[in-house]
Image (cartoon, rainbow, N blue to C red; front, top):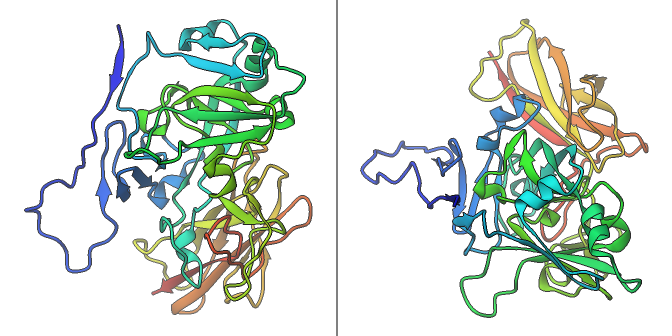
Length: 384
């Protein structure tokens, strides 16, 4: 009998260690993880250090962690684990991990998982919620079973309308709403949504949803339910808390004004167009009249990145960067530019992406929840 387990521990548990006068982000190493930025410890929220994004595929041991409920699984008996498919189906199912690996054709996809609140700390005015920088995301190759194949085996009722997904995490107190997300029936059957049992060629880390994770390419990771063990086919709109009260944005898009909040709110869904800097960073010297690599990532909901432009003069002029080949339509895309600074002191860099539909990042954006950041990224670089 195989058990997979871990305990919540921190590499920063020694309270006798002297603290620097101006400490940077606190780093911790949880089981199966290397040192990451600690956001909260219960539930665990861990941010990927930005230097890790110099790799095309985010290593599992550095992949960001986001849970909503504090009682998450720490021990799973994989011999008794079952994925249950119920509700408006002809044949309810209980599938083991081995069933998923042997009774279905495997499928894989490269896709970006990104928290809806990624980069929330950059919104002005400030908004409540986890104050992520740019590290609440990761790019990986996911392998598993197409959701549509699982639903086809169960046989859906003609009245099927939505599909609800729940994992094994639970609230600490009675009455805490279960974390359940839903997708429309057409989306569930589109052949791209995956029930994954591997990421980057290995079993999912416990903190990333072992043994199964719902992968919803092009949509924010709030839908990527981890430790998935329940799929329930609904005959009407699912009205759970995490679909009707939480993770909402204005129906017109993720933008509103602090003094004029939108009244018509809908569940957040597809990933907003954005681009970030990966290098240089504050630890690397940049020297006047010496070439320097400026590099970053651009991403959206899967319609593709047409171009990424860089400004080194605070947005007055823009130059097109070089794009790496696509890793997949739902993956991030790397951009690069060799810059030779000609002025000492602080140089004001900006980056903006344009997608294949002609959308370009704007300079301003705000919403009450700090979701779906899409406004232009800025980076001040000190040139010596």
